Length: 515
Image (cartoon, rainbow, N blue to C red; front, side, top):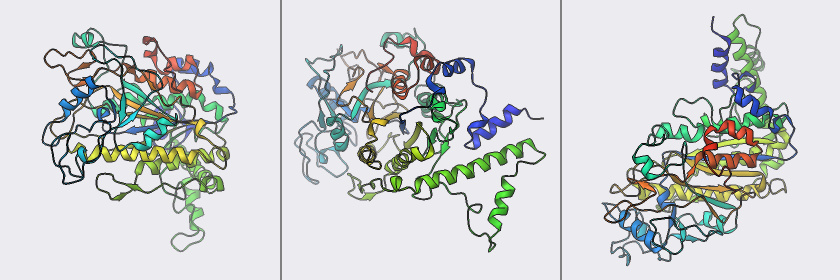
């Protein structure tokens, strides 16, 4: 006979049922016992992970613009069949068909010359100038198609976190090259690094740190834990916990969840058929344990769907602002923004939280297409514009939820497989390591940069970059530090954070202070 725990693990992976979790490891049990998980929260908080699938090129997202760094950046990227170097701050867009005064090339809609210069931002705290950078101070900018992000940064609701990546402990270039310290496995593998970012382990991990945080705080939702971890992007290891199981939603306007037949008014011309179908698929009185448990999952899923659809029909939810039209900045054509659509669903769940009876929620959304080995000039700019457009929409939607500004209750953050190589391969970039990320929310100490922005450049002649190996940056901030800072704001106790992130103790700073 199949063991009960194996059967139940199979079922919890296939349905949104928080009651069929596997046994929690002792360390996590003790951490949960010492956290606030057993107390009903009075406030509401939500974390939203925005995953950029494929590895975003951070070097063209957040740029250092001091003369020394910019010179190395422009030299490395202003080459190849389709150069990807962006234009300096203050450069006016070159009209299509005319010659750029910066590069001497004829601009097309798909070349950086036509986009104008990068957008300057001024972090509130001066960044230290790291060894190897010949500058008295450092200045920064965003990609020219990220003006909504610049506005959020200037309004102090957006922070940037520099050079984040998976680490077991701090490591120098010399230690990395000499293999003196352990490093995360399979650093440049898409699947493994997506899993490492989300779950602190390579592909095959069964639970992620978002789900483990949800485990710790599910008790704050009272007995209604079903809507604690929610994905709008399919199954994500990030949200899989030991006890909490992710609930998956689509971006359909209404209803939020559709279960055909059983909820309809007729089936095959029969008015009573839907009810009979529902009775059959929810019947737990069968001789098979597997069939009984499966029927329980289906029954709870149908009930949950009805609960969500009712909540989504409320005036508070339907009154949220609509998504503005998105225009591809490269082609000038109107496009759908899948990320904005997903964040709209998240905003609806936030608006419905009171009706659902939840106080703590973790969300996962994603946007793909970032694996820009080729055609980076036509792909990444549009994706960055979509991220900026979606961030601005989400901030606006949360500013008025039934007359209440919910932005201080929701913190959204970006993540990605890795960054990409500092050099170009001709018309794109290859896999790298450390990357720069964004954190959005009313509780965020925005308008500033956290973590150390590194020295940039590849070893060439007399220049030896202490912060890079080959064309990849060695992270100066670990994913554990980044995630633990978010978890502390979310209400996870220090003991629980230590259990979720065992390597956190290896780092001097366990809270980066951005929220």
